[in-house]
Amino acid sequence: MKAIVAVDRNWGIGLKGKLLVHIPADQKFFRETTMGHVVVMGRKTLESFPHGSPLKDRVNIVLTKGGSRLPDDVEIAHSIDELKELLKRYEGEEIYCIGGAKVYEELLPMCDECLVTKIDESYEADAYFPDLDADPEWELVRDGNEEDEQTYFDVIYYFLKYRRVKNTV
Ligand SMILES: NC(=O)c1ccc[n+]([C@@H]2O[C@H](COP(=O)([O-])OP(=O)(O)OC[C@H]3O[C@@H](n4cnc5c(N)ncnc54)[C@H](OP(=O)(O)O)[C@@H]3O)[C@@H](O)[C@H]2O)c1
Image (cartoon, rainbow, N blue to C red; front, side, top):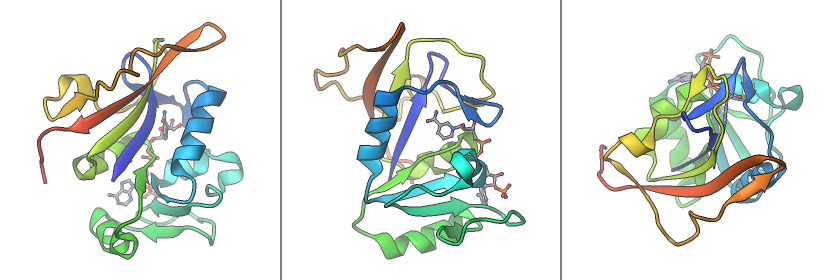
């Protein structure tokens, strides 16, 4: 499994149920990367999408303990164990963990790669991704592109890739 996330300087990812910033090129990167594959998300992230609708042309798996009404065209896992069971159906396929904070934290041990859009700003945030720079189990893949600065108006950001160096599971 891979995680895909956009973080600010402090590894902030969201505020009050919303993204910190919308960068069209990052949204395009997210769409193109995940298209045709399996995406795993928390119930709150699903609800943050327009009309609470799942992502088109992808298998949407939603973690929830239950209680909320969810669209018919999502697959539901009520626990991490149930998710692992469900994912057996998708063996050999690309699976992306797409958040939010709770689900990233829980599924990071199952991830071997993180695609991180690092935004060079400090926003007010209440949801965070684990700081991979402070975690010896993860290293930044230096393939020469990490220095490629991207800009959206005055916002500077980078497309980074982190790889697990030590196995926890
Ligand atoms: N920057 C980014 O790339 C990015 C990406 C995604 C999301 N976000 C942001 O992240 C924030 C949302 O994160 P969040 O942590 O509040 O919510 P979340 O992780 O999206 O969803 C949490 C919910 O998922 C369900 N869940 C989680 N673990 C579970 C488990 N083990 N078993 C069963 N259900 C489980 C629970 O749903 P129930 O309450 O229904 O039981 C829980 O309340 C928003 O601000 C969003 O915009 C940012």
